[in-house]
Image (cartoon, rainbow, N blue to C red; front, top):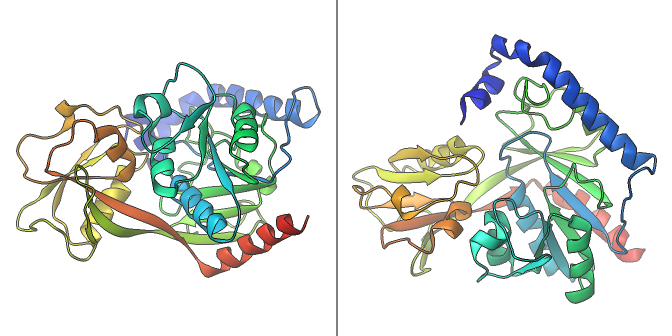
Length: 337
């Protein structure tokens, strides 16, 4: 976590010095959204349902695991889902980029590659999200699209907006950038379709998206996966000794969540945190420990130089049953239309 991120979530008083910049940012954000709403900027509405899974704050909240859950549910229920992504951290020679499990991560970015490997669904990366959506509909015959992130990318029309919130950190000091972690004012929550608290909804105030349905989800560890061989082991039976700490690497938006999960599993560890979307190299692997564990998001960036010490803790989103029922009702409505 960077110094300013720590300040956002600790409520540091010096951040009031950034109030004038926050006011300018808020003004620009509101004007931009109004430009789409009143027709001064074009919105492309696909012929198929589009579900945006995003967040209001900077940093990881657990939206990608929820995207994977939605895609699996749709596939199991007869849909042909596709995933749209900006591909943050990747750079391709041309777009749209069709991402498969073998696409170089330097081209796709970490989250699109991870989702392609986890779901097997078509994934298209493009800074121009409507163009990626068109490609998926035309070339992969997708009849529903899930946008990983993109809550603020209004050029792509949407049928449903799901906002994932960190159940512990919430919205920090509840201010917009750069004074706080918010990409948009909290009033934006009134227009979304559901709030999903990763780890519960206790961090939400009663006035956050008042009247908008709220649901909880958790991230459930599912297996230990050997990064070089792909062998999988039950999460209850770590395939390495617990007599000494392992090195735990995390280049995600909220590394503490990963470290806490390891602790809950009884795995002694030394946490090594990097910035979100960190571009790993072989030099980032510690020399001393005999075991290195990491997240699936980081594993796609380390696969090219990983050694036999490297293990991945795979996790899946587990929304509460009420969300599954709510989601199924909306999907059934689209199927009938």
